[in-house]
Length: 498
Image (cartoon, rainbow, N blue to C red):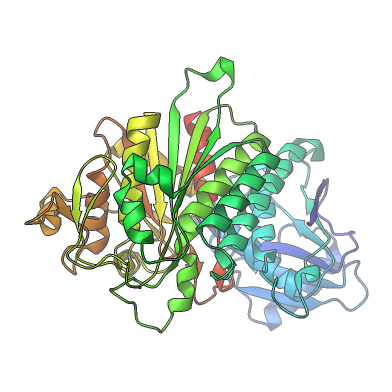
């Protein structure tokens, strides 16, 4: 893993394979370059390339040997007055991706917190976290792995700030990056290897190492509990369903703090069942367990971040396959809370397993706050595109807290309404509710379905992460594949509630 260190100064005299600077629109050269000759040289190169400091733009300059670093990378941040955490995060993630591609072993990043409207601690956390995020590669199955190309060291130039103040933020960055990488590895893993029981083995092992309690509920217990959604979806698979219960207990002094439960959709592969998906792109359905991976990662980070709040995580692990035992459209399932569901589409399976998890959490754990994460609907991607999560909930104040946490974490999320009149679209003639409604507003009707299984007294938020959990086409700040989306937001939310 890349070593993170902080130094006083702007790195103008720092030797490295690559030094990264940032520039706003309207500047002739980065404000973090104080050395006159280096500033002049960079200004000439930037002008020649027509670089204007726009967001997501970049210029790489191979030094002429007269300056300490071999190469300099200037990242645009756009208009200074519009700088956001997300803009900085994306620029740093793109820089990390570029540094890894260039095989820059020693890398420096000059931060100018004075005109960024951020504290030095926040700037360092965002910059280092974004950089490491961009360095990630899943190359486990490549004959010639490229993972070794990740920089061995990232030095942050902190200007006049005492580097000692940055040690704690950087340590927290390491904790978060470690668990996010695990989530991305799990989502990237091929589904022939990662089935529900294998996921329970990973969770058990990682929880033991992190100091988190873990209990695995197997099929016999799920049947005894009456979890018809879990058992119904998994019926067509040779791999049995499991529910993994993770628990980060509170310290005695913090038992009066609120209790939060996180529920993650964990479909290790989704064929659609009898309502079979189109073959184009079906290979990406290994990512249908991204919600469960994010919940696991979040729980594993809590001891390292010294969070004192009581947090539970439920990983609802199934595989959705078509065979002679699989559920059919028209079947009726009974969920844990006793409500019956008419199956209109076996490809609307995620809400069935979440229904069991949400209702079990409300009755058994009795949380103050309840959050579910799921790659739930293509309709959410139609509404918000591939880079944004749809957030719904039964408590506006709590949804606002989720959105604030997302903003702080530089993860893009947007609230969608749970319009009550849309409830009629999931009204069934033969059961309490049906699992799929009309074509339009599919993300909202899915949210309304989940609301049926949440006690009204529990503040609940539903995060539809179908788009940003797995990029089928890469962006400058993120390559194709798993992103670990949601982990940073959940950690921000938990610490805010604590």
